[in-house]
Length: 222
Length: 251
Image 1 (tube, each protein chain N blue to C red):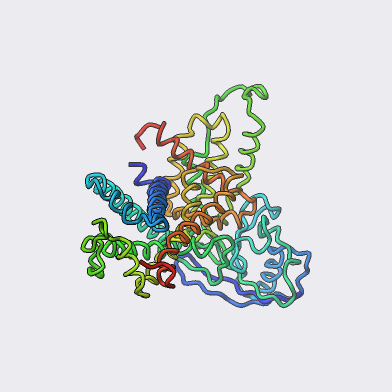
Image 2: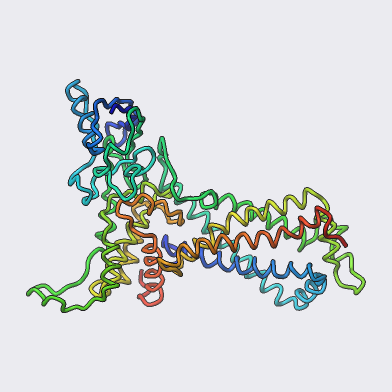
């Protein structure tokens, strides 16, 4: 199939799966923000109310993530093979730290996702704080207690923040790159999309890390 | 001015090359970079040494033959300038200059600074043509083209096929080159007939020739002596998507 075999086709797969994941990341962080309105337990309960939807959503996301990883690796390996002879001196003019380290920020995010799933979905890391085992006054899984308890442990909070730094780097290149690959831009809009992509990456980053940081410094408590 | 040079010397494709130090003395600031190398070569020849092999042809910045990586930048430090149009006034007395060939898997080194860029020709052969009636010369302006389209095609056609984009690309990708060729013909009514087939064949050829995949670093545009824009890469991508939707499914 052209989409899978062609260089441009593979990049289109990367762009589409990438944008789906950006949408997910935005939805996810919007959900996280319910913590500021003391609604996180209510939100979590509603979110998991209908298991078939939860599981279809999970299966789609797993497929998208794995597709992005597999094609990302294929493209990276091809690229390494296409440029095997290093220059004695090479100056870079336009590429950025973020664009150069996509494979590493991506790998770190993948590692983070695995940890994050065991942490807050399977809840097998620090099981005594598990929301499934501890319910709040209204009998709902106590997500707030799980978050505060976990993020008060500095190593967990810092690992979460470093995962989000990787996400910030990955998106600061990835968002604009996906628009370019899908041709969803024009000569005039390219510089705007480049800036907007970085801004979006930064806003997503700030929204995510605000919670563990506020908990770590003690400004957010039960 | 006097300069110290480090030049990549490689006797043959399969021989290990190395950087060799030379000094260039009494160089005028009005010389082009290639003329400076000519002076160095004169010295080498009179000493009975083998001169530095490098590609050059028109020496007026339009043929795309001269391509060297100077201090880590294809075509050197001046923006939108080929090596032959790079003048020595851009350097200072006592400067050290590193000169290397364009490096990519698809560009095997033949000798010293000369690489085989035939892979670019083979991409062109896959789709850089249009169908026209042979026979009598058509009337002027019988095919109407809007000014906007004409300008777009003209901008894309500025590519001189020098290969600097490939040499600058961290992935050794020829996307800017291929995109300029695809965009040039796709922008014009004469190019529409083969548009679907062209973008597929040329991107396939790009892969077959072992060029890498574009990851949107945009290093290519920064070194392009003609300033070919990255918006043409986006156009190639749109042409590709169009061909997937409307083209026939057989490759």
